Length: 297
Length: 324
Image (cartoon, rainbow over all chains, first blue to last red; front, side, top):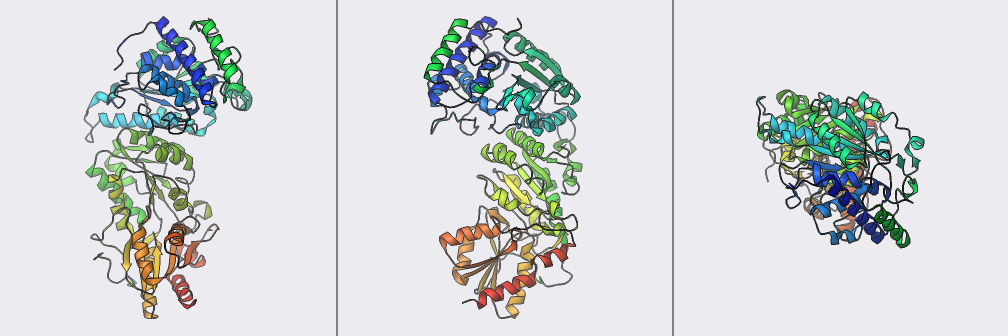
């Protein structure tokens, strides 16, 4: 179990290191997604180094929190965060997308322990999170209605979704289910970076007013700057205190965050940097020296 | 091996019951045996006979609403926590609508979700082609890790359900709406992955699954009177296919007719043709739906129209026997 408490400054440095490794691994792999993983680096750092109750040395620990990456194409940031947290050696990051690697192009649970599911095709993470939460509730109540083992009641199910992914109907089916069954231990995190493959989300298929949509589906909504470590960590603790309904954190992030020429550019959604671009990207990141803060600050 | 089948298949008064009823009873029983058995349904709880379980174990039942993608993905999440989820709807919608979710979150993800598709085949009747699922066996059979089961009567459906609750793999169970003659008994064996020789004969092998096994049995009786000794191999598990039992029978007869209430392309007929063309090429005729949809009508009327009765099997048998 990770018990060390890191300071915000330490977490920000860690997020910087994770971004550096994302660039390196993508350049090495020669394919993969750049923008989403860079934008999510702060959230994943917070999850794996502060928020999740987990044990990298014992991935199947029965009391762990559950974390699902619904938009599986952001796998690079999850792999790097897992390697830094101690699930496997950082050296293995070089095998991303290669034949025989545990680090598949999109995450596969049966290949790499520490992953809770297999994802890539979009829209399926939230309903799996609901299934997990429902099963936990069943474990806590016996057939005769009396309380069983309540340990599962203190476990949380976090699921990261992309915003483009919200075009999928399956997400909203799950949103209704979570609301109907008052799944208070499900915490949805929407990576609101406003881009998807074909262009800006508001041109491809408008999502706004996104907060109102989730509210309309019965969720408690928190809106934050997803590149601000402190705001995200605070939002997660607030989310855990709201037990009567599911909570979604709409985390506004900057796609490609930290690398000047990638930021806000949807063309970087699905491609890796080449050697030259990687060099420039690492220079950009170094210049910022991990002092990455949200644009609104 | 004694299979303890009903003695007089031709009895006009033979007991009948919808196959889905057997699933309902089997699930209730499975729920009593193992408290990890849970269920979810997409607004067809009574129709799919999941209601027996839902009433007995309300806290273990999830009503999903009309959302088949959510049905199977929620099932995957429950299975991740050690549950054995049975998820039901009409076969046209699940696995008809949610194939990719089944592929990714259940098969590739290797979670033991039990997908139950009721109202398969043209015998659904008046509801018409939209609700008569014919492609489910094909769709499920091509998925790695998936087990595909189509019981022949309600008693076998109950046994199959109990076996599924113990199986660690993703499973698909195909059910039918209409009453089907009960040809097995409480003592008839059922094991996932096994085919059974329901009638012995050397001249011809009839390979059938689901509702069509009764018709194959009746056809075999009639053929015997015509001087043709037909063997009936009942294949309740289409995947994994019991290749040994099938090839053993075909080795004797050298002639095969497959019968199913679904598309022959990729269905039981497809599976048997694939097997025999590689391992033991013989003359084969496939009965079933041939690249077309069903339509509204009475169940018997439709089975007659689409050539899925004992009479049609008998006709096809004579034809294949006459061919040089």
